Picture (cartoon, one colour):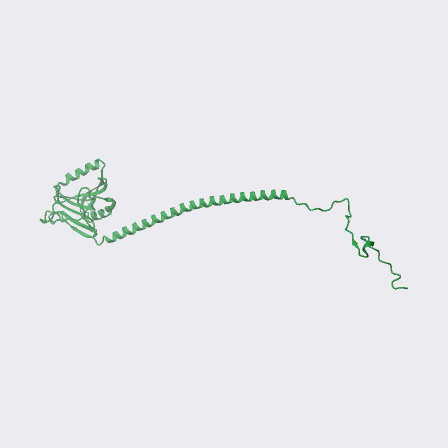
Length: 268
């Protein structure tokens, strides 16, 4: 027996055709659809619909971006406007506070500079009128009957005139705004008081009585508006003379005037 005589020959695959003209080389047969009634799986890509979706999405994204950008710009401008107003308000309040502090500081320094006080002394023949005034004020005696070399005033209503003002006394006129005017009048006390009481009746001045000369005497204090300025004056009698002390501006010298009135002394 020949080797492998009893072995069965291998069957030829049903999927291989043998071409007798081609020798022994088998030719593979393409597979057939085992389910001829079922369509083959074919992938389908909706290119046209996909392009429309992309365009719509891009448009929505662009509109959303524009809307959010507009909202951002509007909010930013609104914030910038509010922030600018707040900054301006804060700056104004800071400047106002700084000015208030500066004014207060300057006022305190001015009060410090006024001391020690100077002492005014009137003519000995007219009761030696005395009072204290700030040392920063200058004194100018325009008319003094006891000083033959002194300058003379053109007014016939007074026999003595002295003027005071911070640092220097400027021109002396009826329109001048001076810190203090000291007059010994050439008029009776009753005439002067009656004249000012007429101003009180006309509601130009107000009146009250104050104690002077260490509370041993009294004076008539009048205050109101004259020539568009807030003024204050005190009128009192020393012996047979009438003395009037006047400030042209209570807005600037009211406390100084009151301190001067409180320090008035004279010989009766």
